Image 1 (spheres, rainbow, N blue to C red):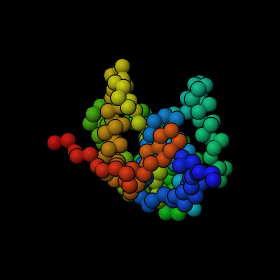
Image 2 (cartoon, one colour):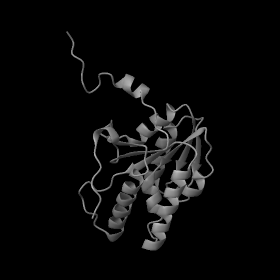
Image 3 (tube, rainbow, N blue to C red):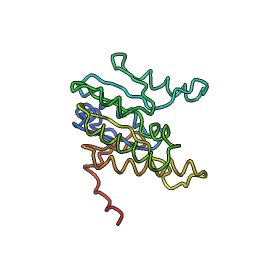
Image 4 (cartoon, rainbow, N blue to C red):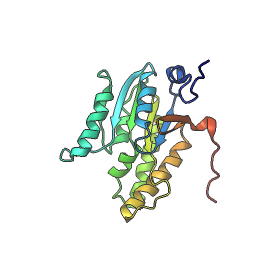
Length: 201
């Protein structure tokens, strides 16, 4: 008698029935783990009009970046709306409507857009973003990169990016209705499988 492979048994049925939660859903993970594909799946099964909010730069002279953008564009259904918002994510969130769902890709490129701000201005941007996310009238899927995984960046700019992104992700986790960690092509429900880390004293 054939034995079902536990890595794949029931996976199609599970994928078909997963639907995004109301409010903010964080989808995090390392590069290449599948977090963008998982967020696109959640958007597709939502039954709502999808608005894709791209926070990355256009970089027309960067061939590698253009190939990455084109790969994402080919995956997106033609009926999805796409807005290139760059760093201006907060104002774009205020224009969303209740019948929509927004897929924001990604938090890391939004952080990079404001990396040159001083600490005070950066804090203001974070407060503005959190307020816009909380006040949004439709469900939100926010793709978040995981930076480092134990490696210390070799530059001050890299260290600032890692620190700001990690701190902002933990702040947003407190506002989230759901959270996923996507790694090696597998999506893990963090609220079902984890406990919160105690805050720093």
